[in-house]
Length: 292
Length: 348
Image (tube, rainbow over all chains, first blue to last red; front, side, top):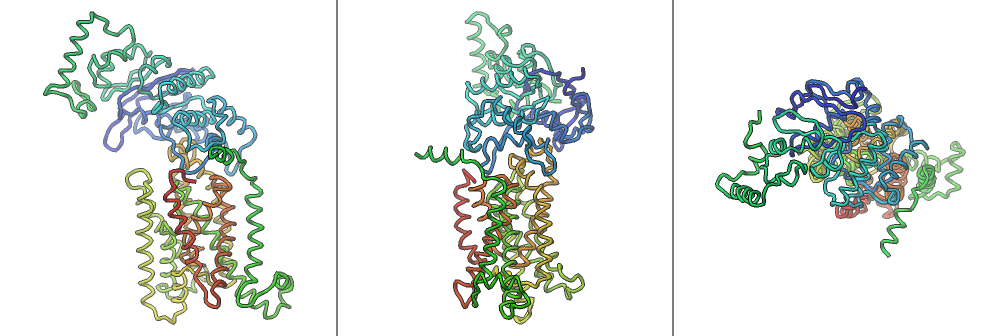
């Protein structure tokens, strides 16, 4: 069976800045994939390419084995749902009215919601547990409630693949865990999930696999424990080992004698304080390895 | 207490579709009949109905009604409908309840275009009816194109950019229109039309002009209806709309074009009448909610009712002298605009 989404040698540039060159990846049915990588590496761009909102300058993106160019736009929206990072609504739309927008790709030119569409909207709200707030005004919801509404819009599209851009951003610990549990339940229903996340612990606890984007290096896909390898993370996020320690998979943690760990931490602190202290810019642009 | 009220407010069901059309439609009929009766000579409902049923036997009453009153009342209605509908469309387009054809400079562009048609196109008869409207449309479209691109600068639509661009363009266009006015002697009939436009005064048009505007406006409103549905998806964000299969750029262009047509028609009848496109949709949103598809027809009908009522007030309240209706809407709309500007956090 063909993967639900596949990138074949995809290149993409924002203006003159190359984001991807020859990116090849694939995600299979019912995977739950964490999309990892530092800010600005192209996580959002990758999700937009997958949703057909951006066209690659070279290579091709395939959804269910079909090239994106061969999909009708609306048909694609019925199979792939993108849940963007931000949702701000300027008017006093109610939650239910917002979720109902997920039916837009199914509606005709003037068509209004049929009873089937209403059922789907109802189920989408039920799945993310927002039925009690269906009549509330979206703009007045809390961050966690908004994230759930966003997921509900995606569910109302009845997609096979749901792409989420930082769904746990601005959520407190409890809401983050709840949201990831919700996404896991969606995978159980047969929806494939690709979610950009920053919290490595959340990724490790919830995802079946991960994609790690490293600036200037090929993207890697693998199991989460494999990718939470100190060398890979050091390179991708441009941090040193002591800073990484608590994010690593348990078996990779350096559990040497206490004195040794203290010494390392001391060295790390001195390095930060010393004349060669890395600037934010250094950190962004990856110090210690060649970008090209 | 307040939370209880709020719960009431949010759990209240939206009115049925039928009522959103039927109620303003009935009001519109009443407004037309009532408004026609008001003026220097008063007619009762019965007299108006008799004249409508037997136009040939109506005599002087018929002349006053059919050549003076009715065209003006219908002109006010068409102008109000066009402005209010444009307000809904532009508010959806800019994702901002403050967008209004007057505020954005579209009306100013239309007035300048119309003025060019009147003064610089030597004989307008070669195209017959529609030249002024056509030039007004081009002027409105250009003004909107400029404001749209300026407000897009810096990536996202900063509201300040939109309002400032609209203000600057609108002011320049008004000044240019006034400058055109200087070229002509005060007796010119085109001059009188332009002066009325700048004041925001509805004048009684000829029946052919009126029917032309009515037909084009109806077509524009029908075209706008499916656009209004897509504006709901656009309210989430451009990215969301694209993700949902909406062709965002095409939608935006069509909304600008349709809105410019409606603005041009309204300006050709009543000139620079401000804030109708802001007041009417705002009021309707409080009752109907923000769904553009429901708002658009309701706004067109209610805009007509509103401007007919305002124009009737304008021509009778200070009789024998008349006040331009644009002045009245400015007094009502200005404070509403400031209120919205202040309450945009919970923008309705």
